[in-house]
Amino acid sequence: MQDIEPYYNWRHLYTAEEDKLSPFYGRTYSEFEFSQTLYNYYIHPQWDFFGSRTLYMKILYADYDLHFVIIELLGEWNDAIENDIMTIRREITDELFTKGITKFILIAENVLNFHSSDDSYYEEWHETLEDDNGWVVIVNLPEQSQYDFKKARLTHYIKLLQIPQWRTLQPEHLFQVIDEEMQMRLQ
Image (cartoon, rainbow, N blue to C red; front, top):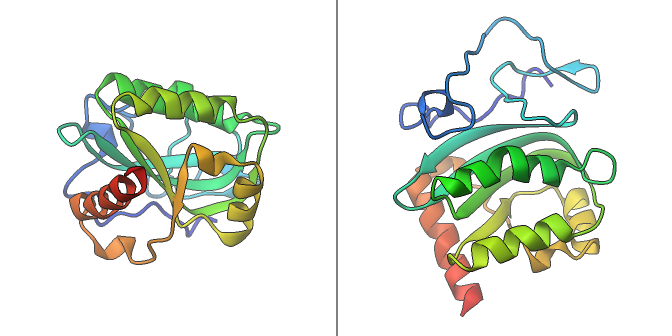
């Protein structure tokens, strides 16, 4: 787990700890001190704790003019016990929404498990963003987690996409690819 680090090739373009509008503004990180754990496994110190004991994140890029954010996730998304969707919403996305972010790209290839509960937070998020032509997309959720996500009927509110080459794209281009796909689905 300590070898899985957040995607770093966009750090010359954006860092959440230097963004005054970011929930993680002012954080400092160590490259050598591994202090955070996920199920007794140390994780890379660049991951951000946001209130969940089983899920960590990193804001990879935010563009307040184009109203989008790219967030990478690591761990187990557990709504049944931890209510992770509530924590994500209240601690991160609601705050970003007040800063003008209406389009959320969640990179989830390192979400090892997904456990659902009810869909009320997903429905509320969808309805909030709908008025601003916003959306939420989860990219590269592993197959077993996709199964559980679809079984809970959460794809009514959040779209799942597979974009294996996302790392080869610049953040604006990744946003453009996803935005075009979402516009086609909405029409």
